[in-house]
Every structure is written in C-alpha cells, then in structure tokens.
Image (cartoon, rainbow, N blue to C red; front, side):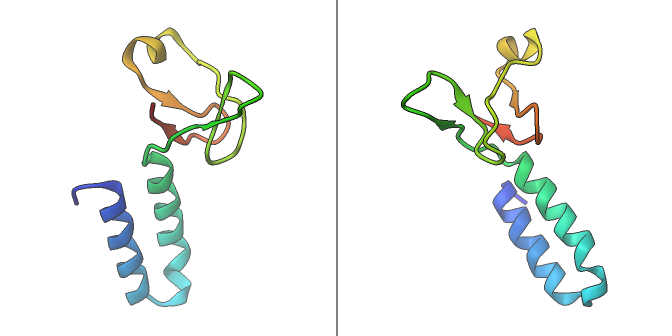
Amino acid sequence: MKTYDDTIAYMRGEMAKQSAAHHHWYLDAIEAMERLNPTEPRRDNTSPNMFCSNCGKEYRFRSIGERTHGERVCNNCGQHMKW
C-alpha cells in the first residue's frame, strides 16, 4: 500500500468479499484510516482561526511538540491535518 487512499480502496474491496455480519469491522478500520489521512483544515474568512475538516471544531495547539514537529491532530475527533 502506497497511500492511505490505496489502503482505503483495498479495505473496501476486501469488505465486499465478506458477509454483512463482518462489515462493521471493515467500516471501523476504514474510518480510522480516513482520520489518519491528512486533510486541509477549513478556513473561515471572518476569523483567523482554522477549523477541522472532519468535525468543524476550532483547531488549538495541544502541546509545544506540535509547533516544533509540525504534527497537527484535531483535539476533538483525532483527524490529522496538514498545512
């Protein structure tokens, strides 16, 4: 698997091969992979703040490590963000 998108596509293909009773396991894994896949934060023209593209909550730094290492994760839902 080269990217998160490739992995998600593979998981969807594997889910199609399984019975409906096992789909929830694949759906949970796909949801987790979608949150790991970095997305662009949403920006509002009326505010200088950035908002999570998944849940819409305002982004805030959690620790000094986020500023120095560039890792951005939503405090509310865990969505990884890039900029």
